[in-house]
Length: 152
Image 1 (cartoon, rainbow, N blue to C red):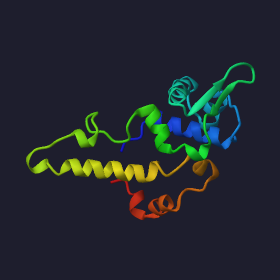
Image 2 (image 1 turned 90 degrees about the vertical axis):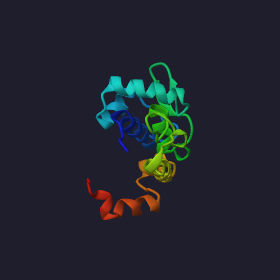
Image 3 (image 1 turned 45 degrees about the vertical axis):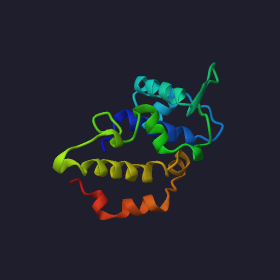
Image 4 (image 1 turned 30 degrees about the vertical axis):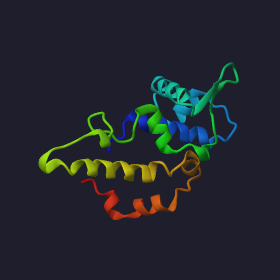
């Protein structure tokens, strides 16, 4: 899986917003500065997150961004989908809609299994989990596996 800068920035920005507290209204400049994200890029991302209902905005001198629902109810998958679309596609199509012939026929099952495993992590880690530094145990175990750290 390739995690784009857009997805990475979106998740980092939302974790920063979650860390600010449940009712906090935070300016985009503060989010951008805290995570070293280019402000213009982040503002475009925040627009997508607002459209997806993950954040809301407040205008005026005391304005900014806030989570539209509790951080414990927003998963990393929710944020990625809001800015990138589905977690796993094959040539822009859902894996179940891709068909192969001959020797490659079982490849569809591989792509579906990849999507399931992405979901097993990204749909179970919330913004609150990361902001509080308490990841689900199964995620910690996966990250502890030395093979997870190899770059091949």
